Image 1 (cartoon, rainbow, N blue to C red):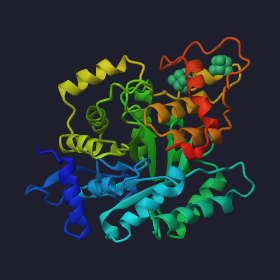
Image 2 (cartoon, rainbow, N blue to C red):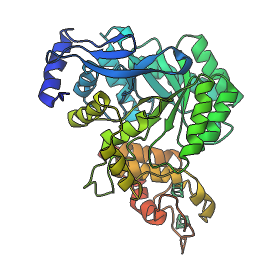
Image 3 (cartoon, helix red, strand yellow):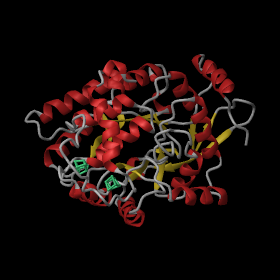
Length: 393
Ligand code: SF4
Ligand code: SF4
């Protein structure tokens, strides 16, 4: 297999502007149009009962602010692009809107996500406005998937007010398929979603580090049987091994591990550069998990890394019951993803203060499934809430 390098990406990106290179979905294979005389195929899988068939590699647009990387991904045969209402304060959706404006709508699918503030008396009006704003930014009449974003508490996916609004969005044609995304209580969330009956897609954190793997995989299997499609996120466990970011995680091995589960339709790594895209494409063109991958991941499993299991055990141990799993996610966004604004937004939304542990003489969180010293990580990340947003990328 030949790799596609940055120079080649740039040249095919330029060609795409003239309409010379477009991906086509042919049968179950996504075929990237020839870039060097040879067609490159990426295996595709069906996404539950949605009728969508998409490549096993999709683009998590999340932090990408360079449309040339989106163009390179599109030209390389990727067809599914994942954003959210809140990413980059709306600029992420706007960038996709500009990029896809002149593209044939049948050559790509877009997912966006919106957080449902069910505590608000005006939830219905606010949620509708959120979706309308996203569609305006995307310059689209509809999104292919709309996810109720980052569902954490049980009893949310089956909340009647949320269900009513999601159904309304679909009935109005603004949303082709309804989904939810989750980091916490994953197996139970999936079972609630199956029972709710309206969810077609679940975006779920899924990686080789998970302690509850067999429980989660059994729930995913139940979801698949009920017709739900599964999209994997957090597959690269933060992207780097520690806060110094001296050692990068081998993303290709992580992706191959995810794809060995046929119940996962696609993964959405958030690549922001040509190098990262190339790394992911190499994996997608050679998706079988190899012996060297297995050995590498086994070695990594014993390391602490930045990924929080979201088991929630720490919250019970913490004398202040801080939302530690979310704080750990904010830590990963900053030190792993190098995305400080998302880190600050995550903490601000939860009203986590700078120095959230102040006044606590001795940390009572002594058992963390990821082996974290949570108090030191909280001290390292919460000062970001006081940094003016315009200083943060
Ligand atoms: S030090 Fe922080 S994390 Fe530990 S128990 Fe106190 S408030 Fe909770
Ligand atoms: S105990 Fe550790 S792994 Fe579990 S949620 Fe808390 S920080 Fe994350």
